[in-house]
Length: 479
View 1 (tube, rainbow, N blue to C red):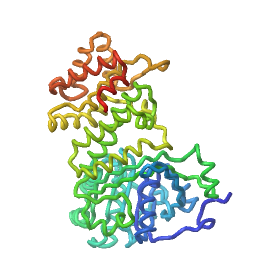
View 2: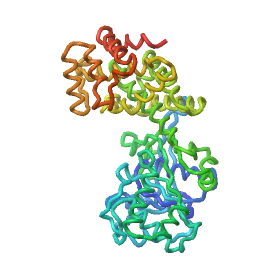
View 3: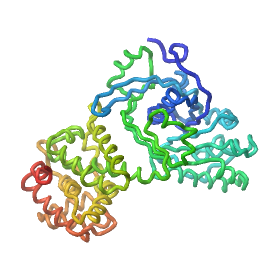
């Protein structure tokens, strides 16, 4: 079988206009796939230079294949199974700034360069005061980027039209805000001057973004079948789900330069990414957190099984469409479309998502993902959302431990939380369990016994789970 490179396959060549910090699976299956579609469908005419953000990385592997690789997308699209394979040809080359620092700086000298994109892990956006301007390169990602920006500023004498659009994809809220803060700290630490600072603030944009696509990575289990289809040796095949979403908090004018909408992609340019962050946490992560203990204690093991089950499937829809969706302030039609897309993702036949992995640290997850919705629902409706409360009771019941059939239940959380639940269940009083968990301010940051009716409702569900089992309890709240 032939090696994948530009001599052995037909691939396009585009002008270098994007600098990408990171060569991992997510960026290649998400951002570079998006750029590929923009080139194909919107005449974007751009290629990506990949910069390896750490000393040890994959740019050598990438260069060995001339930047080429395949993306295998799998999932449900409007209920239909999709299993596609595409050759992505947008990466022109990869650079290791630790070995090619001068070549790295030359990227700033290209007048056509316009965009900077990154995914350097959540820890990547951090200020390291040990970094120096003279380092080759600075250790931190913001330090490397500041070096590049300063070189561009000097190369083009502060020209206003030579700024960069900077779009970080690290999975932290307001990633762009945090990255901009770090760059400003380096400008001050390295005494780079008021003119450069003004150019950075006026000619460049650092935009907060939200990214969403599950990318399992290299498909070890199906690689032989994939290579048989593509008929070339590809060591960088990456698998991802069909669903994709990129929300960019930026002026509408950026869409004219980055025309993802013209390519029919789910890329949104919005005044604020906060409501979309809340939507994802509420309608994707929130249901995950409560469906897991309810489904597991009903005898089911995967997200797909739970969503497709006659009883627990109704529970999931109740939580999503009747309860959590009503706590958000985006347009109803948009929320319902997103929720239906989430259900397709939950039902993905190509992914086995075991709920025991989701139940790691369930109490902190419930606090951030479901508790805000519970409170808003109570405030707006005057009653508690039964599905969400049953999910909380399910977490408490799961943390009791014991067995499900022949399988031992082993909760995995902060030791203080596990010990609290163990001691409360040892009292033999469901009321004490409910009051003790609700009153644990070290978990919630407040006393949830003060939420009207919550403790008694949790105790009621716990008693039902103990007496009838979880599945019978779920049946009492779904139609």
